[in-house]
Length: 361
Image (cartoon, one colour):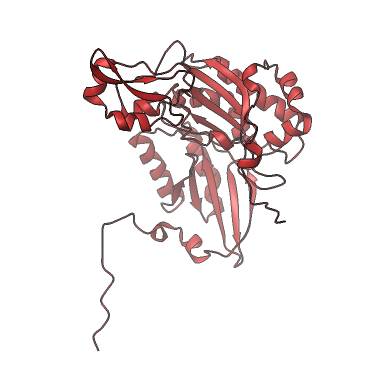
């Protein structure tokens, strides 16, 4: 009887994650009993077998150079047998089974200019989209805005003194590539004018049926101008999402005078204590004012400070707001209540089921 063929080697797809696991993690896979926070940024994970592994969380920007990656790799080689991982919120987590290596690692990381924290009752690293660096539909530069925001909130990253964890997300336009619809505090870049149509170029650079179908609100229609095939936009229907510009470069939407930032609050993904929540509008518009965005950072710092002073332990931002009421939230923060805060989508509560907490009749 012929022996079975050896598994075929292939270059299709990524390598299997198992080969990158720390030996302690691989040995105890599926056997973890609990974890504890030893101090800001440092967790110990304990297995049913008694084995322990320590994770040290380091905040980093989303856009980093090769030199920075090499620095992290060298530190991982020095203290963690080469093991580290990047989290979904752009943190770097060093993994070691040697408790004695924790403090020397932290000292070298901080000497390199990077903070350790973001665990337990703190503000985790901000997850964000591309911004002006790469995205063609961006209404703001979220990379710079996130840097300015985290500079203001640094104390809440390196300490665990908030009532509960606070997750912040930023997206550079209404398409929300970031998690702005379900974060405690969300920064959303917004366009406020319909795209400007270059009628001379539409028929040359755009596929008109695709451009028409790209609009989620059916605001775009084909038309003819001076004998040239082009499109027109119904301004009352336009939601300024820039989807059309994605497929038709002859419809630019960026506007330095009218583009800006809105602030949203109260979202969460967790099912703990209450259902998941969508964010709701706190501030409809703040100007783009690079490089430090003082209006935006001041508003976010105000929200965090008021939440820190008034929320109960283990109460997320949205749960705190619902307890005190939205009028009280606006009173405490000093934000102006405007017509844009009135939610007239009357069927949202019936159609947007957000939770696994389902009751069967």
